[in-house]
Amino acid sequence: MASHTPRAVTPISMVRVARPSTVDLITAELRKAIYTGALPVGSPIGEVEMSSQLGVSRSPLRESTQRLVQEGLLTASPGRGMRVSVIGPEHVADVYDARLAVEAQAARLIIRGGAPSVLEHLENAYRELVELSESTDARAIGDADLDFHRLLVDSAGSRRLSHYMSTLVIETRVASLSDPNGYTVRRSVSETYRQLLDALAAGDAAAAFSALERQFAEAVARLTGQDESVDTVETPEDEEPPSIGPIDFADER
Image (cartoon, rainbow, N blue to C red; front, top):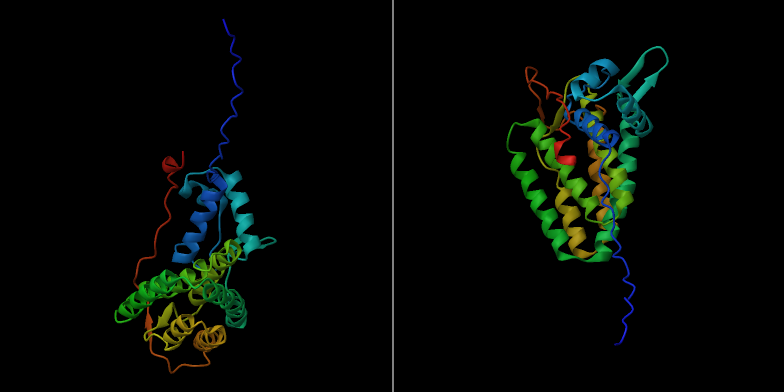
């Protein structure tokens, strides 16, 4: 009777799916709170109060706030503790210079890739911005504007560019929220959006760069008070700011 030697079976290589840690979740929640204004610019971050609001312990909260300090979204001052950063007029141009570097490179990568679906998604985002600009909801208009630019960078397919842009988007919002006159957005959509989309469709990287450069120059002039002729939409003074609630860990298990 023939004997059979069992064949060695190569184990299946399984890739462990990385789950966000508690610190990751806290960091994401704090970023969201800063972006929406739930944590107002310049407001203090009290460990006891914040850990209670989020339903977390102070140790991971402390690690999370240190991450945001490194990103520039929180500021730590000796004797004053931690506060949400304020981006004054003197720093607005720097934020937009960084955005120009990131978004112009994203435009080049999109042109190099030549995927028609990318342009279709950007056109949809542009139409949504135009539609919302006919309303009086400053936050919705501002969100649509930043969503367009975030989509532009994400469409380039560069993980690092998207990572940098995620912080720059929040810094842009913080710069607007830091205006002592309140949060305002431009009512009309700049023609530079159409110029950018046409440049991407034509594969003209130089024209795309010029459209972004002009668009950002207009934004800097408005946010720094150099151009007060632009019609804007303001957030009502009596509008209730978003609240910060406990983090739901159920979906992450």
